[in-house]
Length: 609
Ligand code: F6R
Image 1 (cartoon, protein in one colour):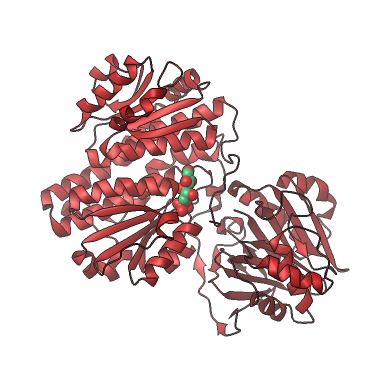
Image 2 (cartoon, protein in one colour; image 1 turned 60 degrees about the horizontal axis):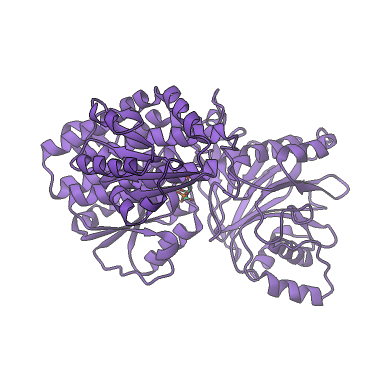
């Protein structure tokens, strides 16, 4: 997703804006740019390439004392990555400058109209259309011009706007694309993500959809797009700026893998009541009566969050006895799902901004469903639009490949399972057994992480292979999907995840000595079946890397390599079995020299469909 940073205050804006862009680099982008009000007018610098490149072509701008500016990292949608398509965009007379996240859906109609009026365009972007429109309406009041232009556009936007003759004025507005305002004494910050402002202030406003904010060094003025005054709430960011540093690790992904003992603990802290064998999820308090009466649950998500939902399905059906369906948000939103009064919907999203998940949430709400959220990013669109929900408290996830968010999602789903299970059919003592097992997870994860060197050595052996199969059954089938996804997204190696028994219905044809299989062979009720599946792979010359339960010596006869995880109840085994797969993917990608934290073509949060 593109990144926005804006500043108004008394300091030199340049280092603040460039520093903010560097923090947002993790989200994925292809060009970067900056606009400043410099006393004579607008000064724009932009180009294709990284923030460091922008820095190298603008170093003489530092120290000039421009105190109002905007900056952007662009991820191309309309028009190829290039200097002229990069943001900021201006109107034809360079009177206003705009950076924009989102998509202006009716841009071609608007552009056609403006071309007829003789307006000259310099890019192929939808964003320039909005810049030209604001420029057309701009006289003296920048907020009024932005408001008027936004009334004509369809689509989504998070924008920051400045004008050539208005030092000390910065306008932000949003619909469907996040904007955060950082509030400090005598200065204000605007960003698409709180991580870009946390170094300067922890007091933030999460701007709501269809709101516009005018920022000056003296303060802010918030209105709806139709100009009704509102008083936004100021929140405090709970995590510190250290979360944005690699902390001695080579990559954010590795740091986040190693953070999991803490992040899993944070997801259950204050929520797991071990002695009572129950979970307390305050964010669901309002819907507790509904939770008791539900007859069906639908879990909606994308990507890794969808894999977490699949594990949730296995957990909730087994322990709480409630039928669960798991839906891809992108499918759910465009079909006509059946939502009955006793159906409850959970949307799961790390970022809380995934366009398809947000649209699915809105579709379900429109049909009258109660929609609850499991999100990481506080104040995100999904967190705000749901009727209740549970935060992961995992801190910012910077690596594009999701790791700690996944295990936190599993933790929250386990808590939800415990809550629902105890309301329905599991006894106090069974609840206590699950709670105790959950409580032990952080320590067990720490133990698995100690095998990092061993896993790196295994990765070295397999780093040259171009095809992998990941197999698992029951609770570990979704983990096989997740392991395969991790490998393909960061190492560009083809990997397929399958329920182990499905292998013989097709994928077995692929197996030979060049296609290793990663098999989740955890000691559970179907362990023997998984061993049979391993035999099938071996019989075709395939190598097997097994993830198995400590104490299982038998597996060593069948697999070429074994990575052990501590003993755990089946329901919680994905929380442990996924860790070696995350490390394996990481080390294979590192061996192949891939750009692990910012894999090609991927963005951290997918805010377009
Ligand atoms: C994979 C990954 C993606 C996301 C997906 C949903 O590592 O990060 O598959 O899981 O884009 O994102 P959220 O959870 O933010 O809705």
